Image (cartoon, rainbow, N blue to C red; front, side, top):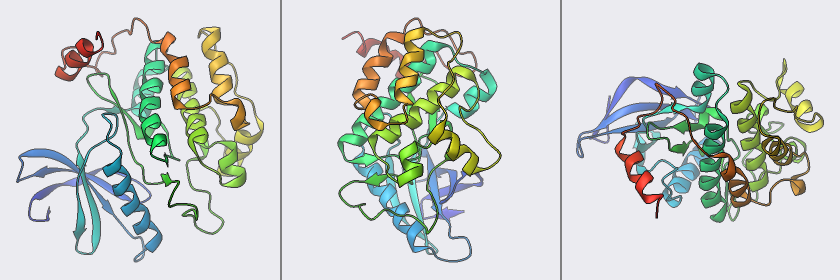
Length: 292
């Protein structure tokens, strides 16, 4: 399929989500790979999904950070909105953990710290992600991390009236902070809680809280304390307990504070065969830049 007279889409989507599907594509004008996200409306038009989709595009346009995908274009094709974004080559953290199992402490800390850097930039713009989870974090061959899918993100200055459906809690239960579940309140601290759930999963190889229904998981998120992670430094386990505190006031103050607390654990990163390219040009560049 050709859209906007320049983007050739692959037949099969790379992924599907609540708002639509992401296809790989090719920009004929600039001779490069792109990712094209289409909005779909199950059973007809949906004004709320359309508002979220437009808002996500505006957020990506504002969020200039190497850890977030670049938005190239935005438009409509046959009355369906689309976003054209940077094509990200890599593996999601969900697939990484599924294939590798528990990650080495330095890599789990590195992925979490890089995510903090992106969250710090987003939070400074008044943007809360609201749906941070392993499928929305991608590890690239150079070892860098991209934070994806800002479809549920909130802009503080414009989203006082939250976009929700009646009786529906937006987000993914296994990564939702207690305050999101109990009061529908989402902000920077709830993003840190979600990242804590992801960090716990990277270190153990399994989701922190599970259950037969979403409500069973909600109950655990609100009431159960996270179990200790065996085999990790005690200081890292203490950090996990702090970032996963039920009371937002007891978590690290912000993404920068959590970033600083994670840095001591990022030492002597071991190879991850099959996932990283030691000679990747971006990795070479960042290695030299990091010496400055």
